[in-house]
Image (cartoon, rainbow, N blue to C red; front, side):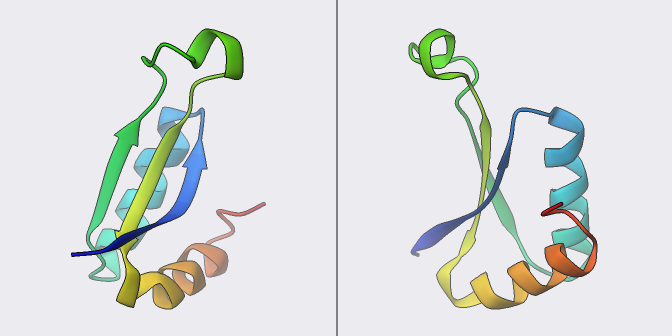
Length: 70
């Protein structure tokens, strides 16, 4: 299964909201939390949301319709 980055944020609330929106649309998402990484202090930590490559367009559309990219 290939995944692709669809959204990232430093806000846990935004990540939770994005994942909820995707789930409501039937799109499974996966999270990588980089806030606890060694580089977080230097580069700033963030949480990344990934989806399956074949669902990327639909995921972008759903998140965009819900103003998640503003």
